[in-house]
Image (cartoon, rainbow over all chains, first blue to last red; front, side):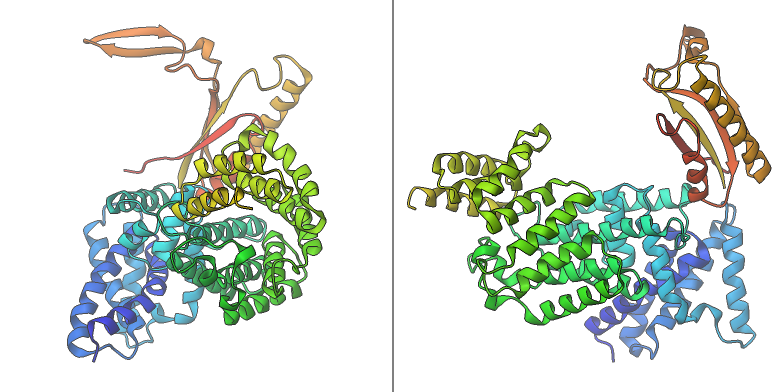
Length: 418
Length: 115
């Protein structure tokens, strides 16, 4: 029999697939979601009483379809509703005629999820809407969970989701996997949404916790889904590798008191070796496809860290070369700062400081916290304690994360004792 | 679905009046319009006189008040529009990206409301 926990688990496993398939028939995310929501209430009541059916996905799909038929009948006058209604009634007709239910061809469901993912990550939507929609519709998180993940009020998130779904419908954002000419660019867009979700979890920009594991785990789950859906795309594997290799360090990144521990000082015995191995396998799969890209290069950097016994004996020359390759693909401040740090480890702090010079002179980066944190550490290593103190103060003033700020304050205080 | 493709640009950003570049752009507009028409996806479209020719009308206290110029002073002006009937937003934005002024102007794509 299905206790409340089991019923909820069964529902959550199936909901995203059922939703994606229903969207294909009704062509409207909001309506499909409303129908599924009602079906979920029926499922809780029925499954709780009579037990979880053998095929909960099929049960939900049929229940959601019948709710959708009711909703479409009520809104028949609206554009597109009559066509959607006809499509669903045709399915019901087939069932009534004793045929196999064509709406339950579950083999098509993964493709439906991929379509929905491309819809959620469409470039015509604002980035925050893409992230929220992806977590809600593809990841299957409830609206309050999505709101919590981004530390915004629940009504704010609910509004953001409603607006985004309305835009999908009113603007005619398509529900399909883009054609070959648009696919590379659009897939890159999907990957960047997943990576953004991961990064929000990995170095939470707000709040008092550094790592939000739930978000990281969700991003990795989306990455797994994506590599299953587009197994020939090396960057999808590269991103999954990157996320796993970084997330493998989660337990070592924060100490018992919740304080941030830099990679340099992490207890590598606490790295999740199973996840490291999975990440290395992802990277191998990606590289075997023979089309390198930025996620694969970043994952290769993480792999070198994962394989190094400690900070000093890390293959810094190789890491500096990989960041150099990333720099040639497009300059971003993140890459430029990491490149300078890697070069400083391979060739000494002076070489790293020389690379930071132009970044520090760039006014647009004057509020970029990681640049000033890296600058401080390099000044410290070069023996310029006064310069290091100034840079630490600057980085501290720019830190929005309490854990990160505390670490910088600790380092500033330690300057005088060295 | 029907979309209006609104074509905006800053007159100072485009080719100068009467220049060979302007001639070339004019040729591109003609070719694009012909291609759109032949695709069967064009519902309509027009080019507009510059905003110097615009008059804005507001009715206040029952009286029509006319002012010279566009309704708002913006750098980029509406220079024309197309209405297309295409399967989805991707098809509409693909046309929008081909507007000859898209590399210096802004093209807004708006779905047309269906009642």
